[in-house]
Length: 242
Image (cartoon, rainbow, N blue to C red):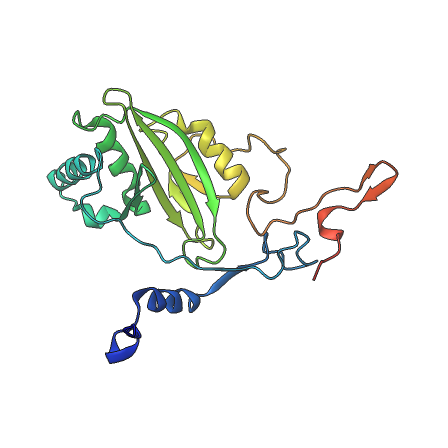
């Protein structure tokens, strides 16, 4: 019977072990299921540790129509004197979806090229989503634009980030008028200020509401609820399972 060699012998450490050790060295960005910092985690997962996921750009070839979109956009930007790398921070192709992470100062120009170039023809913006990553210092707030090419039956996402200290992103209402109410909703819930928007006012919350309720640092709040003779306290008053 021959002995199997140890993968750490002769200086050849197992790649999975290296990757695991590097992953465990990443910063812990959330504890528990919901990351509560006040009354404790009531989900039963208080010992969970979620580590920061390093941004991993996609590598060529992206697959599907993604390479064609990237190459065509690169050519259109270069024709106007702007390189693809200056406008796009990174490209992610995953789960059958293509996302361009755009530098906010070039967002309007990138969107205009995607709409007007006949080889791209992303005529419609389906909506704007907001996300909040408190642990991403300098890029805490993200706006995500979902684009559709009706002509070519293609979909694309644009994602742009802004720091919490300067939550400004150029409005795309001049390029895609459908962004009007969607940008208002994103500002209402996340506090992203869309510069150039014709009427950036609240659309879901009352006009005198304080704060932006879908940010992760927004208080949970709530009211006690009576159910079958028992009183269930609001989330911020519930006990911890720790």
